Amino acid sequence: MILTGDNIVEMCSGLIHEPKQKKKSSLHLTVKSIKKIISKGSLDFGGSEEEAADLEAIKPKPEKPDDKYGWWDLQGGTYIVFFNEELSIKESGMGFILPLERLLGAGATLAPRVVMRNDEEGRGLFSLLTVGSGGLKIKENSRIAELVILRNE
Image (cartoon, rainbow, N blue to C red; front, side):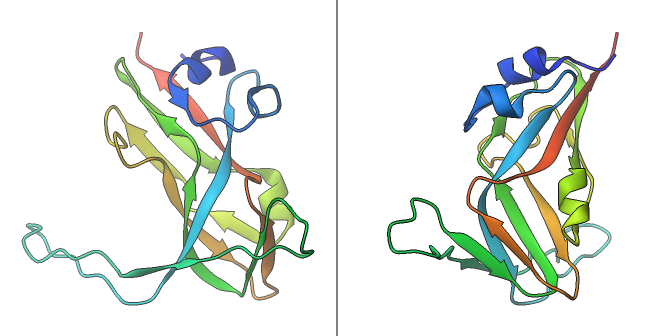
């Protein structure tokens, strides 16, 4: 069963503007921060040699001195995007983070992610952002992804 936008809102905190973010059966996610991947990570079979890649925060810059929100001016490449929204799946089920069509139309995409119960507790939601060779400008709090949640019946 796909949960309604109302059900998903009940599981989330950190929304920027619920009426604009809540959809019939999903919730739009907004950009909180973007980090550049600056060193390679490592993975092994058992996990004892696992190491996350190092990340460097990219600061958004206002286009005009009186702008309330800044812009990230990204070159083509891969980044980690963190969302304002936090999720707490209280029942059995799983969430999916998917790119919005508007992001695809701007020449970028997100790696789809599966979010299981308590996976994101205390960390907030994030995903891998890939920007095409033409680059991309993203304004703070832009809607770039959607969260869909399936519940077992």
